[in-house]
Image (cartoon, rainbow, N blue to C red):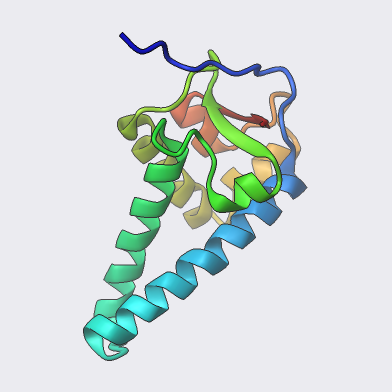
Amino acid sequence: MAVAATFATTEKIGFFTRAIALIIDGILVGIVGSILNAVLFAGDAVRGNGLNLLVGVAYYVYFWSAYGHGQTLGNRALSIRVVKTDGSELTITDALIRYLGLLLSFFCLFIGVIWVAFDTNKQGWHDKIASTYVVKA
């Protein structure tokens, strides 16, 4: 039986480092989505939007979960990771809940993301919804 990895949750990462990682990831997801849209749909913007959403969901859910060890490529570049508040890795369901929370945080004028800068545990709304921290890897 495999033992689940746990990580220290004491060194939480703040807004600016997380924002840089998210920008890196957004650029990567945008490039992949654009290439796939050009190949599959000849650049059709309507079908491409759905494809971009699907690529984003797949990317974040995979890398935030235990399969990606809580690190997107942007997180790896900045040596940070997403973990549950108990230090364990996220399941696919946990990662999907966090992603949906991130979308909600964006839709509310980014207030849920900016919340990280003012929260004592450095959690955005999506972190609170999914019971996660972003910590030093």
